[in-house]
Image (tube, rainbow, N blue to C red; front, side, top):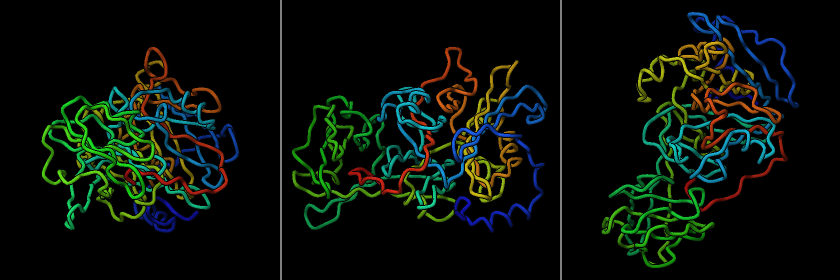
Length: 394
């Protein structure tokens, strides 16, 4: 594998040479968990400034020997589950928490799972994509937006409408799309307008429904408008009319194609390093200063110049054990590990690393590991096979 994010290893190496390098960190001897899966534990107080108690757990993954994928809690959007339960249910070797989410389990950033977009985003926040290749997963990094539109031709003219949200709570006056990953039904109240779409190509199955809580077909999806009178552009949705869904990924950093071909995409907040260059200005991601400047438990994913994948959790909010890290300190850790790409994922009480049947870190919530909306799982490499087609947005 000769890739480093969206650039080649050669380019990444040149970029690293072009700037002052951080002091390389020696993580010490690893614990071998499985072929291609090594676990490290760091407790060096100098990892933060000023120095203090710190505990960080790191997994180094050889992409030639493992697969990495994203999964939903309980295999649907609504609801939460611990990282360990997700890891055990899917018979993984290891797992970490992944994207940010709302209390009901609804992801608050971009999320694509097994080829299907289940959460869009209109803010260009840091994201990582997993592109399956014959010789192992390739990770791509960038600031990403994702949106979906619906189009159809009931009268020879193309009607196109922008979707305002995918698999999320419906809002007044907005057009939503619900896939089977959301829940068994749309969970919407009466008073809106909903159309059931099924088949390949997708087609409207019957008259518009106004009762809410429409059942979502496994081989289709539901288009939902939060109001009694749908916009003019949707009034031609009649039984039998064929519908096309189009997903557009917009990266402010460069090429779009890696995101189209990614099997999984996980949104974060705080792209730390991209193609060998540390990122110092996070204003484009639109998060508050306390999020970046205060020490918190952190979760990070990164890739080094050899294409090895690193999963990192840093404990925090436990003064005797570990203070946590600011985003600057987390970026410095990424640089000292000589990561050419690195992204901050959800942290705080969500920060969890599960390895070989046990949680190895010390989650900060008083009642133990927090239930989260989604996780990244590590498996031994299965035989190469294409992921299944889906009726929902790609």
